[in-house]
Image (cartoon, rainbow, N blue to C red; front, side, top):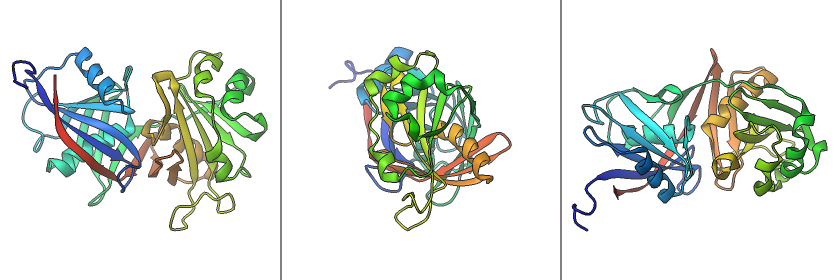
Length: 300
């Protein structure tokens, strides 16, 4: 159609983050907003709704170009709302700049609603993302009994429950729970928001200590330090495939529990994804691969 009907077009990509294989990891749509282009909040939300992926990110630039600059604006939209932070979409955005566009910087900073987000080249394929730590604190299990009933069904499976200041609940299962049982858990997604009697949660993660005995190993037989699943019906995402922001909560928890700063983790969604994590100085460094699956233009 003519440019008169669609006066504004932006490049758009789909990237699978935290994986080295297509159709796994967590997909994000990435849009490039060049200097001089202006997208309204409504337009960005409509793109996020149209793409219908867990997140759609918009990389913006006030001046210069995407190849030589090293500071960019970044905003995140789910299909229903704008959110402050999305780890996998940040990594996917960096993948577009580094891998697709050939940005010459070794380090890039994104300005976001949650503050500056720094990403670095880790090696030829992996990218490291530096995020603020969101260490959880113990809470009263009784306050979440209704929610646990619709999430893990049997409260006897639960070993610990904690909450971050950002509203993410971490539910640790007992170590003798197998990976098979863990992956077969079938939360009643449509009842989770209603069952949150605190009315303060933004997400819920279930996590399990990685042991060879419970089957938490990768395809090469390496034992994961922990595995997890993450549910976000509060923002319109039933189960998120692989979640960077969730790991800013789970990583400091497991670093303390295991007394180690370097962790190897897997998110056990149907798509699945691996993360290498470092917890230091109240920061969490997430490292992962990414695959660019789609390239095109979005007309507005």
